[in-house]
Length: 222
Length: 391
Image (cartoon, rainbow over all chains, first blue to last red; front, side, top):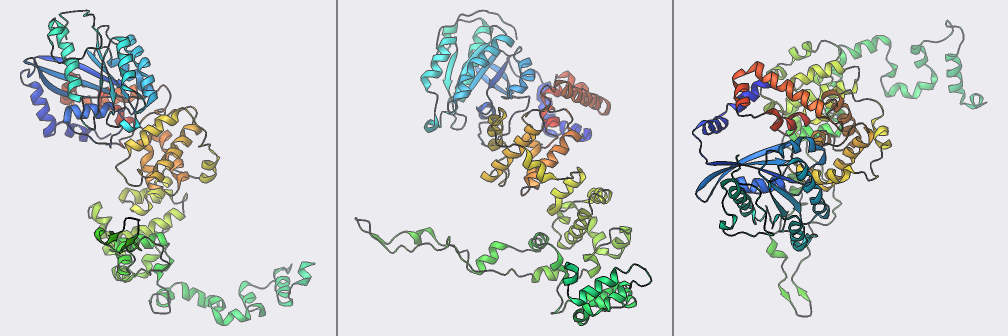
């Protein structure tokens, strides 16, 4: 390991810039930690890449362990910094990834509409959330790759049904065609904002609530 | 019985060789005078007396073989076809251009393949069948002139480097080679003359493996010609024995639970290279990975193993067995226990050592990273797990 190279890298302009911005006075009002989970190859990294960089590429490498991206959005006049954790889908990495469940305020559970198994595993991922995440974490199920309708094996109804059954929001997305990506993140962030600010959830516009949630807590601190 | 039936000349020859008393046994030189070899005598060198032989091998060596006349074969032809092609390509050879010259690759405007008239019942006029994709039995000789020219100044001795003597002697005798050695690697890898020296030398050394391992290592510190990178890696990893047999013996076909993960990872992670993203590439990739997982029951497939396998498969694309052997030798050497089912302890150990290294070499950086809680778990796992093959 070339440590000099590493320190050089971290001191390069890009990183310095990032550091300076970090050191500057808080440029945001709230910090939300989100987590992306789901089977390997469903497109978690692509969803995140579309959201953070507004781009898509099919040449992705598998995520090893954990990775993250940061994006600041503005919601109801508040600057919200989203720290989004991207996890490895391979089951073996669970010991690493589950340790990030605890700090997450919102979790996106992704499956691939062209892959039956990834949909069946949603139940398993939900169980994981129950075991490792905060009780009141905001959840959302995303059926990704909905641009590939000709290869679809999981109908929209089935996705909605499982979401309804567990009282979770649901959306079909496409990182490739940029369908519902921003909307999904914004909606999840708003849901968290509602709780944080202790506001009435009905205030939020433009929302598809699959089932009325029980708002468990208010005045939550991040 | 059989011996009795031999032709009388041969019978006599063998009897002489088998003389019990050494005094009666003829010397090799005397044997060459035997009538058995009479026909060959005029033909070639065997008749030389020992004096002549000595003379031929040493001082006469060059005078006898150097002239590249019409009757003598150019020493370049003793090189393998693979080497010749590599050098020819470096000297500017381009197969497609050669084929185009011969009219074997023709470009045709797409508009020309549209029929001039199509009747409603389906009769077509004016559409000439495209013949460019049809089989053509013509043999196209590839001109080697440019290559000869590029290598013209290279002395004959360079075709036969002495690997047993101190290589400095040869290097000193060849100023050009020394000169090129100080150039940046990218230039050295494009220099026909330099690559010629390296390829010839490495060919010798590889043939002398495993005895020449030390010399290979020494040369590898300078540079490795792209042509032999796969073999040199194999030599440095001490790949040895019946690699083909070992590879064939591994069951690569029976489905296992890792298959799904391997099938998900291979197509999406290796699109940076045409070879690895081809159908054949995917197939080979899967076989090598499966072979590794099956033959190492104590280990499992962790995502990242594919990235580790990729360079070996790329370098040994025509020999899955060698790619597999290299991967199998590389992992215990550099990534011991990384692929255990529970590798937490090993990963933690590496990350902890890494943190200490940063703290030692760059305390300011270490403090900063700790301050923003940017722990190595967040960024360094893929580095170590793939041995930087992704970065």
